[in-house]
Length: 303
Image (cartoon, rainbow, N blue to C red; front, side, top):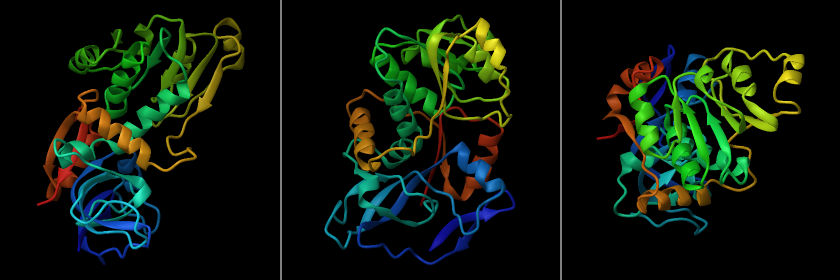
């Protein structure tokens, strides 16, 4: 089969063996996949044998031998550990969700990584009704989903985005306030959700209320963070800084994917596709994503 493989910091097509599913896996004919920024980082120095592709949607063409999961002919969205940028992908039956008729493959492919991250961040945050939250780096898919979910849960959310048009869209989705830099945010906040790193994290930390929490879930600036212990004595006393990984869960991805699919089908979550193109243009899409010329999710479709 054809697949996209790492090559010189981006991807190129190669002929690879079609995957042979294990007993607890289905074989999916991929109709669409999403490109995540983290995958573009990995392409710069890919691990040996690694192939990108964590967000896919398509058609089950071979059911799991152990009798679990969807039947042949059912459409699914899935979150495999990799190798999804290909004509076929093998996926564990507990890492997918069946799609309803009204949800197309391109929209569904935009759900897994960004949606799972937002959903689990909000769970880690705990009860947010009536609480003041600050979300940095809110322009991407995680920021979009988290804004909708947090607003629906009753949070008073301030989002940070450098893009004015994106900010207006986040306001429409429920953000209480939009600022274009952390310096423009007005604390104190009960909780900070931080994805930028670099100099922005300590600035956001300064806006916490005493004994507040900062959940650190990304570093898109790719700049290291420097913290001054003594500076905290004049600001967010006894603040907690917690590293967050969306993959640090004790249950499979399937149930959470089902939740995301259900919310989308009910019109309560609205994936936004910033770029949809043919998968033969994946290298161009990666370049656009790296250059931050795309707002929303980047989805590639197969012929």
